[in-house]
Image 1 (spheres, helix red, strand yellow):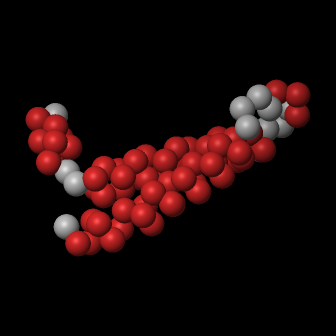
Image 2 (tube, helix red, strand yellow):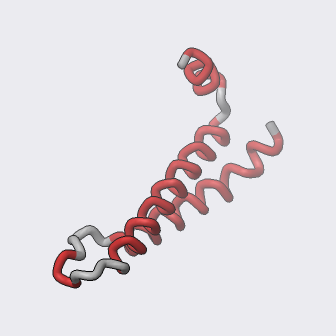
Length: 77
């Protein structure tokens, strides 16, 4: 825990943006898995109410954009 606190304290803005991008892409992968799980249900009446496809697209685009913006800063150091 202490090492993570030290990393976040001295991390550049580009590294923090990259971490947010990775978190958004992780949420997108989770939404994709949940959408596939929902589409394979046998009972069509019990599919749920969460718009997993919309969440997947939102998180994937946001995470990809954050990573693209942060890559030059991370490479430069």
